[in-house]
Image (tube, rainbow, N blue to C red):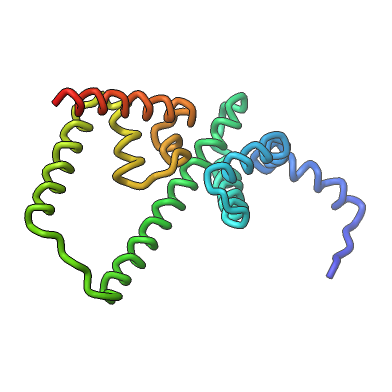
Length: 188
């Protein structure tokens, strides 16, 4: 249902909108930067509907916090930071749900699994311990991406967001870390 406005009321609307904590400026900044933010979220999530939901959450958070925002020159960076935080929250939630379902699956074994021989188990355990010890001896910049990728099952995009580095840098660090691992494990 549409309501009718008097002549005086219509002329007040634009002024009111301009005076509500700069939200018309917010609209303009979102028009300029929104597509970049959506594409960034989509590149991290790789699921259209989920990326759209997260984009909406980013816009709501940014809208609510905008009156306190001061540095308009860094608006896109500010939005990127909000987007990264929303994606991290999504991954944490997704990880918890995944863990829940994995735990539920373990409650109902499909078939009896063959348990490894004690000798095999000892060898595998000592190999894992040696690998973890060797990885731990690497510098942080090489160790962190390797641990996140191989032991925490993170994607390169997730690692890039977590270590706050471009994906190409993460790939390079992983490659160099593996080369150092190979050299250290080969010399032992």
